[in-house]
Every structure is written in C-alpha cells, then in structure tokens.
Image 1 (tube, helix red, strand yellow):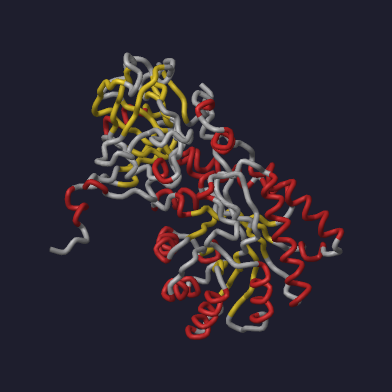
Image 2: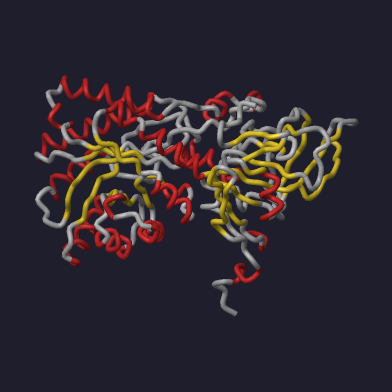
Amino acid sequence: MPWKIDNFLTTENGELVIDGVPAAALAGEFGTPLFVFSEPRIRHNVARLRKAEEIIGCGLKVCYAAKANSNMAILRAVRDAGSDLEVNSGGELWKALEIGFRGDRIIFNGTSKEIWEIEMAIKARIYAIQVDSLYELALIEDTARRIESPANVSLRLVPEIESKTHSGLQTALLTSKFGMMPDEALEAFRIYKDSPHLRLKGVHLHIGSQNPDPASYSDALHALFENLVAIHRETGIKLEHLNLGGGFPVNYLRDGGHANDFADAEREMFEADFEPADAIGPAWRAIKEAANDAEATNLLDGLTLLIEPGRSVIADAGICLTTIRNEKVRPIADSGTDFDDWVLTDAGFNILLSMETYKWYYQIVHASRADDAHATKYKLAGPLCDGGDVYFDIEGQGRLPDHRLLPDGTKPGDVLALLNCGAYSIAQMFQYNGRFLPCVVMTKGSGKYELIRKRDGFEDLVTNDVW
C-alpha cells in the first residue's frame, strides 16, 4: 500500500499499526474519536527539514509553526527534535515558554498583536517579533521605550507572489491581510535605523501553505534578497536573517485511489510531494548568483535563513480514529434503481474543521481490514446536526470525492483511520453540539504510547459559563 510508512504506519495481519501499536486496540482503550500522533515521525520530519542546512552552507533556523498544533506534548516533542518555534499569539508564546523554549528560539507572527503580547515578547527576549505594519512597528518601539528593553524585530513583506495552492491559503498577495509593501518596509528601516529601542534584524514573507511548485520558493527568496540589498543600499543596515516562511506540502493522495475524483488544480495541490531541501537548495544557489552579479556577496556572510514549517512537521504524524455509529441505504436522486450505502461516524468537522472550511481531503483506511481492497463506494458523514458535516463536497465542485472507497461489508462498529490529519485539527476543534473534544495519544515507538490530552467530560462543556 503506497500510504504505508516504514517503522511508523504499517499493517500486521491486515490491521493498521501505528509505531507498533494496533490502531483498533488504541480505539478500544481510549474510545473514539481519537487522535494519535507519532513522536518518531515528528522527529523524522524535523530532521528532514534540517537537511537544507547542508545544502545552503549558512545557518538555518527551523521554527515549527505552533498554530498547526500547539498541544503541550507536541511542542515538547518538536523542541526535543531540535526545532525552534513560531507563535501567533500571547497564548502560544506562554505555552512555548512553559514547555521550555528559550526566548531566542521563538519568533512571533500575527496581524493584530495587543500591547500585553508585545510586552511579553520583549521581556522574553524572543528572537524576532515579525512586524505586520508601520503602525505596529510604532507600537513596538513605544512599548520597548516604556519598559526600557529593546525589541528584536523583522518586517513581514507582501511581495505579490502567487502559488498554486488553495485560494484561502495564499498569503503573499496584495489581497492578503498579512504584511506590508516592500516600499513601506524600506521606509520603516529609514525611520527607525537609529532607534535605540528597536533591533532591526531581518525581513520575512510567507507565500502560503501546501505549495505544489518548489520554484515558488526561488521567487520568494529572490524577493527577500532584493529587499536585503535595497535596505543596505538605502540605510547601511546589514540584515542578520531572511525568513522564507513555510508551506512545504504533504502528499495527501499517496494511494492514488481518489486521484481522478479531483480537478487538475486540486489534484496537483493534494498530491504535491517534494523534499524541502530540494526547493531551498536551488533557491539559495540562485541568490548566491544574484549576489555575485550585484557585488553583494558580503551581505550573505553570516546570514541565517529561517523557515516556518507547520504542516510538513505534523500533518502526516497525526491520525484520527473514528467509529462507524450508523448505516443507511438511500436511493440516488433521478437514478430510479441505484442506491447509496451510507455510513455515519463519530468524527465531524468540529474536530476536522478544514474538511468543511477548505473541503480538505484526508485518506481513509479501514483499521482492521487495512490490507483488504478498498473498492466499494460509501457515502460518509459525521455526527453533527449540520447538513455540511459530510466527507464529500455537497456542491459538486470536484473538491472532494463524492464517495469514499472502503472494503465491502464495512459496517457499524468498525474503526476507520483518517490519515495525514495532524495539522490544523486539534488546534481548531470546538464543542459544537455539546460534543466532548477527543483525547489524544502519542506513540513513542516500539509499541509504547502515552495519553497527552484527556477526553472532555460534562464539566468541560460549561467550564467558563456563568449562570
């Protein structure tokens, strides 16, 4: 099976096994829905990203994007794997510090930072606050002056670079809410270059998530280099780092079973699969050539390259186990004699929000019959009192398969595994319909595992209610 991953996701006697632990056994012990994360796979993914450092020949700072999944045990695993961290709020910053990240291993993104968050970041002496606007830069300088501690900052640019990902994941276009125009950033360097309260460290951009074309990183790095040169020419400031952002893809269509169910652009995005080092390497070589042509090689000396991977660290390390709770047979409209077999699970978009907001595809494998032919069509849906809580595209736009393929005879009580769903799942889950949020388990390898989030109880549904 193409979706199998040696020493992580395998089968034994037809059963799906995660790091040596049968998936069905975990579902029986902890109940479903249940998220399972592999610590060895997280370590593998961080090491895979770090390989780019061998190619570029300069410092590389891998900053895991906490927004993808900020469970405390996940953050600990990422920290222990040697990754630094990118946060997007004071809450994520607090979690980072609590789990043991030093300030110099943290960068802080976001469009709407509050004063208390800025104060917290400055006092923690984080590596860089990524500045979203001229207005925010003024706030940061004022805060740094007031608390008498300088702030490390990097300016986020919006360079008008389009990638071939989902429209909702594009973050480097003028229509995006993120960042400032390059000429605004240049003006900011002019205005604040002598400020004793700001340390102007670098420039930053992020072209979006699940980018299928590695060449887009060459475009992005070239834009950063042009700004690096312009800033030095106009202000004399030699930047310490360039931040390329993240967005490296995960192959959600490794099995190919549903490939023909997608439009070309959607298929290209979901099956994107390249090594991050293979994107960063050519991009960096092009920058070196550009530096030679511009007689600016000295500007690359001592430079550190930052990347902000989230999905590529955690997506394929996470699996959601769900139990079929109901079945029904329904005639297909206008067919006369054809029927659909429906199975309804206990995992809805309240724990897999991207399946609704982005019509995101997660491959499904029968946990106890993983080696059986997945060739029978079923309509799949979740448990929520919402007509959109389905595993297919109800608008028929070709963004999700109309049916899912499972072994013939799949029935209530069977456990299914949704693969590659570690990113933007538990980070976005919510208690719609008064449903308990699931517990989360982390496998450690060699058949070992631990609970890293307990399942909600009734009291958790009203924790902050006042009546």
